[in-house]
Length: 436
Image: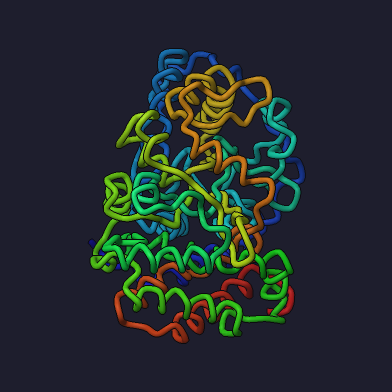
């Protein structure tokens, strides 16, 4: 597998960011109103492409089947290798665009892909009146214009745990804060249990360990301070979280194969009880659902949010939660892409929920009977969660890649913090953020 370097990621993001600053289309058209076709209108002969990541490429299967039967259109899902976001940014910077793509719907990531120049506005989407009020505008907006369609409950960073492992070692309740979780991990290690499992080879989840430690600081304005240059990744708050993550690894609280372990390995290890806990987001549970039925998951897998001060989650809508529709210049396909979204969140929504066994975002559509309790607990943690870097920072540097390098033994925590801050400064400048 080709190694993705921070230099390439910066170059791709800066290309898009500079385009947003210099391209006259980046300010967006004066009128962002779009028409919304009948969700089941015929589209014979129309072929659409959806870009998806490794952990989202199976999400639209049921929707595509129903849409094809209703409209006659064909839809191909193309998997973009991880790291997904950087891969898409590079492709789009060279003019390669799909009709739709899974995309992280935060303002910073919409800025990173130059939404105003590259995406269709989804103004007045027909499903919005049906959305739960607290979720309608939680994400997907940039400067007041909607560019992303939320299709599943926004991700929350927290801890998935094996109930049977906890029970076998007398753990009757989840830890109440980060320090209690670490203390529990040490107890489990002393009994021969692998406390935590990390996927160092696939890299993208490494940042969750740092971000959950920053939940309290985020609540008190950390990202606003970083956004304005008052605080940096190299200052004690973020650097301290990076150092603690490294210290926990050095202490042996993680899987011995942390450097080579993959996302798939992580799911298998937790489900099989080879590890007690995993810090992850909602897409991880989607992988577990592909490996086991609801009865098994309810028996084996639990979830709790975590922060230094308590059970507080960190809100991070990720690319598996939302889709964007690209402005390709082909008006027929652009309309068909909007039609697919309208079908997904309209006539096809209930079947989609049942297929994915996931929580409903619409007030009039109940959760399917098969939604596992852990997934309901993740959704319940959302209202009290605090914003992640992706949700609140003006730019998203490659913290996860830098942390993966640290796990591989090629960088120190101090070098991770400096590389992340340097890239953040470059991206913030490219995006025109004040103070940079």
